[in-house]
Length: 46
Length: 381
Image (tube, rainbow over the protein chains, first blue to last red):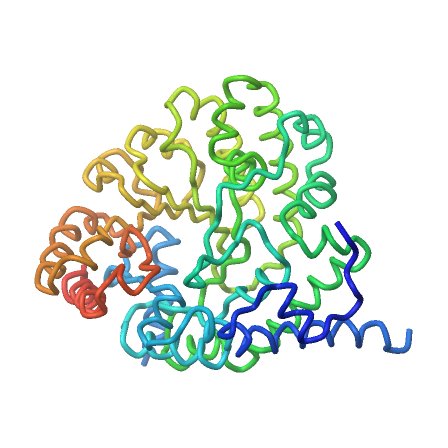
């Protein structure tokens, strides 16, 4: 299986998870938040 | 003067101490999905909104006067979706199901037997968690972040807040939801049909794998941090025995099941099991479980259970959940009375329907309310 980009954008999440319009209301923001948490993990000082 | 919550807690303490409580504790609930549908919400939208989930769980707590909290607002639906969990997949309506998926190949039994923990983490998890399969380096980190993000959303609006506000039982905590060794292999590795073929074609492997899984489960029990002064429950839904012949159950299922119950008690934890479907052919074996076990029954004959089972155990469920969908409130009340006459005789019974309503169509709310009221009225010792 192909690797995954480090952080996916909103549009990429919609496409990857095939999110319906309904799912984009509350599920998408949670997924964006998770991606942002991953991003913060990598940019925080070690 | 005792608060309502203290009274409710005492019912449970009494049961676990082998004393007859003041009345039959009444536990029941509806799924979060039911509660969302009741309020007219969508499982594709509001199931992912902690604010709405809390709102509907609170609505159920207001309506259903059980000793337990009837609906927990917390859901891992977003984590299932994000992690691409093949064991929890949403249907078109957004309701999550556990499909009959088999991530383990039969020839991998020796690998499982050799090191169940390594096999579970390195082989099985990537097969059912898409996020780990596609991102071998950071998949576990992503999963951890998903849990943190979702858990944080329920801070201040989760079950603990509702339990305190509505004075529900707060002296018990489920410290582990797990499975017996045989069920674990059936549910997570080989699936329902695979394991039934394996006990015919590779009986030795199945027996060894069950013993190995006992060690794996011991590791989980060892890591539990007990909550002092509470009942620390280990919950085991039992799946496969109703589909096994008694001699297969005795050979493949019961020995490690019995050892697991003993291990749970040796760690000072309280085992609670739920016998799915009809266990009438296996009832005698439950007397060979050590100590006190809370045993729930879905479709077993309550008269037979009360005749056969040792009184040291605590019994739960039995009430035919089908009635909640089809009957009238008066019929429900009559059935509650009939059931209590059979099962509430020794002081070791907790009322609960045989199954939790999952969909709105599974139960009329007025029937649930009538059921709870009837137990509170007729369940006084």
